[in-house]
Length: 529
Ligand code: OOB
Image (tube, rainbow, N blue to C red; front, side, top):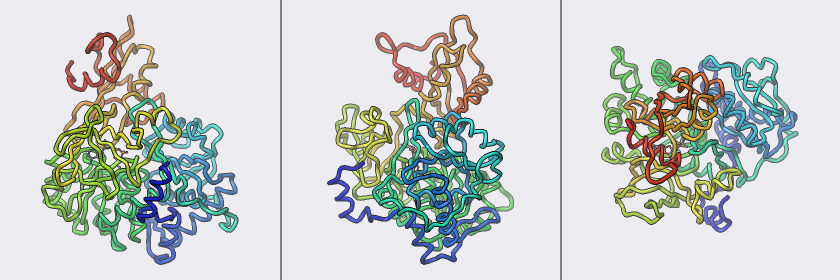
């Protein structure tokens, strides 16, 4: 992962403290065991009970055959079971792979196969979808279900004596695999270690002002890096605060939870901020949101107009968060002036986050000039998991991660995101790799060629459009057919194009054959073309 001399430096400077994620929870069980850690509807669990349950579940998984370093794909909605499972895996030193509830057979099958996962932990029915049907793509992996297990193993039945467990993982070991938004055909996996992740969690908790009195609402999917660690649920556990789970992020669900539980901080993507603001501004009986101190917004670019409405309407501070599951996270600070909070995406967590902004030839550009953001640091990966070829493109020879983001650094060190150079669509914070969707569409019998691009959208920032060229003699599929087709192939709904446009042929730029990449860029630059 990191070269030895660099790792030594991060240890010597106290960034990497040699702790593990399970030890983080155990420490809270030791000093605040009776305190409520998580509230989920009418269920709640204390730090002590969570630690005990996770240990016993670890022993149950061990008896089942799950061993340290084994991969386990975890797809759970915002429920207490998520915590039980991930801390059990952390205790065991097994490696969770964080899938999203929206993922379907295409993604889940790939994660299980690509990581040779020994188990797949999912739920029964969520948002109208029976997740147990995903067992069809689980191969030899054990299918473990939270809730009604059907013909599979019940999560609740897994239990054992922790005394039988082997020693836990080392702080430098792989802790879990996060998903990359991706820009290529298949999602890449992001290997994070206990040491590196905990550093970002501790610093984030400090930057975001978390204390034992903090109440954090999980509105976004629980396994996303933003909700996990920026400062997220792990930051709250570090501070000994309380976590409230929202089953869905809509205002009708979330606003009463903020009022009822005295939520102090929560994290959203820009379209949700927009939705919440409209709901509060438009409601006759205003919910009491006086407990809310900080609204974090990140995952996609927040518009100035939405940013400016946060304090007047919600009565709380805005914090912009520009992060990535690969590592680097930037925050506006809670005491920054309005100019910074409203118009920048923050500055890095760490003095040892190295930021390079370069032109197309990798030459550094000066402040206030837009360029490609490259970064290296104590919690930014040096390579994707088992992706040697791709890593040569995604990282420089000296270990900088090419984020694919176009940014400008202000003289005060704050970053402003100006765009993106990667072939990814950011649909309101949900990342879609153009090539992944194209590869699915290219298998359609009536499709000769296809280019998937993002088109600007006032609400989501971007939506997806598939430009299709039909096969000779065939009629191009309509949007409804494309939807049904991709759904049938088991693709997550958020990746399914919002629009389809049929072209006789793709525009040719430059000389000769047009690469798909150039084509996407041309269509993006001229969506009417
Ligand atoms: C977060 O993580 P990912 O891995 O889903 O996506 C990372 C990408 C960034 O490279 C950038 O393209 C975009 O999402 N992004 C933003 C942004 N925050 C993320 N673009 C503009 N403005 C922002 N504030 O999205 C993520 C991870 C941790 C914390 C917050 C977000």
